[in-house]
Image (cartoon, rainbow, N blue to C red; front, side, top):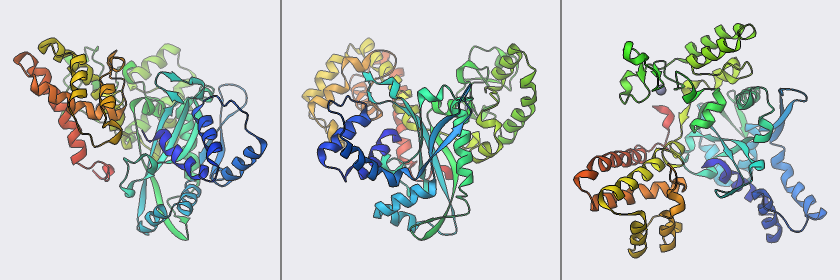
Length: 437
Ligand SMILES: [Zn+2]
């Protein structure tokens, strides 16, 4: 969710200086649409002028390629970005002023891949991996515009980088390390101290950054030492090990950063002499790919952002292509099976009643109808956005309760538990400071 929107927000600041028709043209270009008329030289000059100041916040960073010329990506200087933003947005400046002078403030990073276009028509050549950062004390983690752009690399370039995203992440962290943000940076005449504290991302992004193997490994969890893939028989013979479907997290034995770093350091010298099969087996057991260019082989980067500091983001784990969007499909199927209430019937019903929604754009008959459109209910996950999922959960709970019968009870109970988890995420005020726990 933060990706894309925060970018547009910063772009909007620059674009406000253009005439409306050229602004639309630039926005269309950013979206990857075809622009009928070529951009005039005067327009290009104007655009270059406006972009000069924010562009100065970013630098090209070169990383080793698998062969040939190094690959360059762009990364931001945190001090310059904060200075630029504070000098343009008074409320942001006041937020910086309100930060304690002596305290070291926590910076949270996020990374996601984003593609121009919509779900049905994506321009895959325009796919980008985007990094953003956020100052934890600002208490507005949920606001996309609170995330400031930090780095970007086109996915088509990423495939030529030795070590892929993990090497890019390591280079980005080394670049930030050079900026001495912990000693204090000057923003609008005041000095404030910062440090990199966490990375919040979906599992795909975390897997790319840390080179973890996920479901392909015997040990699929990045953080647990004793959790095995559910195809393994080890948990049956040794009580220390548990299958990934184990629900009692008191059984989980988490790996410490020191243990993980030690494993990487010990195994590194073997990489040159190991046969392919030996390396594959070790990686499978470790749960990580041992690529020598990866982040976990770089002492500076891994100490700045160790594996135990990462957070799985709720937006992607629960709502967008997450557990919530899977359960919506499963519960809808159970509802139809046990009560004969079909998706079509619910779709008709939400149009007839005057449901009120806290979100304006979902507050119409047409929008509610769209939530239940057939195209969203194909496959194993609901195809709508995180927001759609968020509103569908309680809505389906309502229909479940109305048509509850003994055969539906178990599916309904489990659906209610999921709904309670999402409510808990709100009441616990995770936006405040999830890192203090
Ligand atoms: Zn785990």
